[in-house]
Image 1 (cartoon, rainbow, N blue to C red):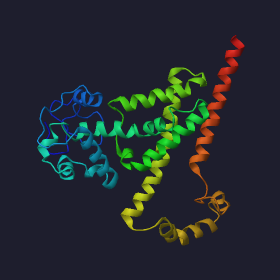
Image 2 (cartoon, rainbow, N blue to C red; image 1 turned 45 degrees about the vertical axis):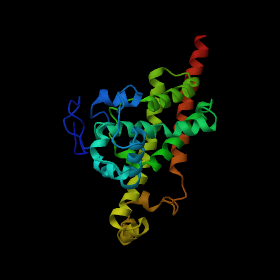
Image 3 (cartoon, rainbow, N blue to C red; image 1 turned 90 degrees about the vertical axis):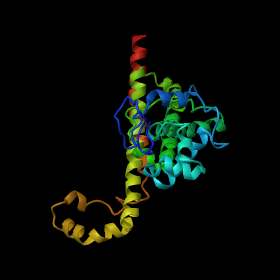
Image 4 (cartoon, rainbow, N blue to C red; image 1 turned 180 degrees about the vertical axis):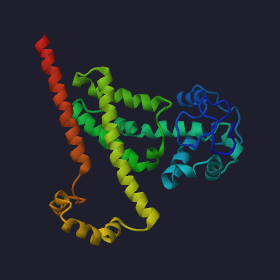
Length: 276
């Protein structure tokens, strides 16, 4: 069992060590037991009130405030006011903890939907818009999500519930099952790409101390000379508002995606009508 707060437990089905940013890199069986509530709970705890829920909540709070690298079993023991060894009675290590954190965070939009009255809208276009918007909001609340390798996500109840709701909302598109998954992947990839670009820009400001305006102003003399050289006629001829912050790239891109899906849905409906 790992005790340094940075690796998974002994017996991992993945690599023996992990940097704490890859889901499914710890003891997968133990992660699944904890996610689905089938694992044994400590019969007696060294500190009253310490629960797995509190540990996961504290870990997410630290990650939100300082990034995933700041999350360690030692740090969490300080936040929770307990001994580090006490935490290992609930979760084997950081790798398994990451699986629990991810499932919890993925479930946050679902909680909001339940409070608002249920699931996603019946109209698949509105549903895709809602899926993209809530995912972008989630990535902004938890920027560390973009640092995680989710190629082998350990699926818990929240992750499966989210997929179930999405598939139910998209069923009216009339696409084949692999295509429905393709729609979800396409939308999520678009959102993640945009969120990553925005996050990288914010991180650059924090790391360099230069605002975006200061950064581009430092290049202005060189860019102006380049534009006047005649070597870049397309760039030189672009309007002054080309790179305006007022242009919403999220709305623009999402609308184009939905328009593309509409073409495919219309083709399938036409083909279905013809065959009938």
